[in-house]
Length: 302
Image (cartoon, rainbow, N blue to C red; front, side, top):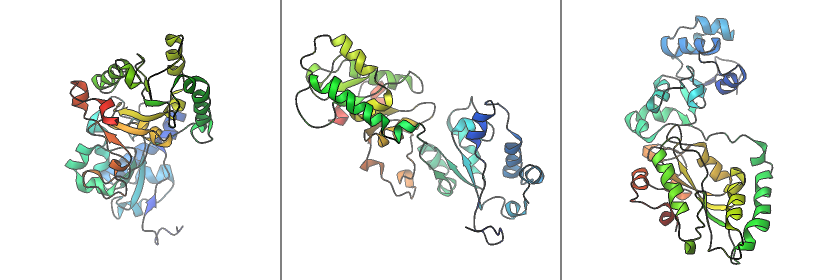
């Protein structure tokens, strides 16, 4: 690091749009800082930058920002807050000269713009909430395993749930409904108990009131339940990838990605040169196969 801009190879712009957006009332219009950045990114005009950031624009303008690093967190907190935009509309800003750190790109976008994709960095979704990091959710899961689940399963090692998925119907709704339908209809010998959120590791035993048992398991906090499952389905949400993918990794639950266009952070997918091969830690089930009932998520995890 250096404080001498003439010696710097790269400049990190300390603008954190997600924090600004959430702490200033989630306004639709760009803030003064975002307007200044837009002037620079799109027109190489540094007047607002110098006025707002109190910093000379000459270092940006000499390479049109190609040696500057900008953070674009969730798509809705991009420089223009594009709430109603879906698909590539979230990513087009990243075709400009700066290096962008963002939470996602899609495989199709990278395939269309490989050079621009390689200059940018896809980072994992942040995992907020202290329960993920101080052991709280793991402790809740351990208590539920001991008191609620283990007494009703044959003895054996491993997590008590084969799969767990609890979510609303948004994003690719047919895929989400297909996952819930398959869990609800899973055979009892397979660990099915008629619930759309989970399938047990084994056929249950010694349950007097299955309705109450189902409700108690389904009522567990989603974060804790992921620590109880071997596999966690991850369909797309408002965009191809989802925070759930990274939640699953933290919980030690194998992500089963049901999104054909999702791109993992730091991955080597679609020609990128990242260090991670998702095939080493995640599974993939085709969206169309699930929606048309030609593919089975439970068969994929067997």
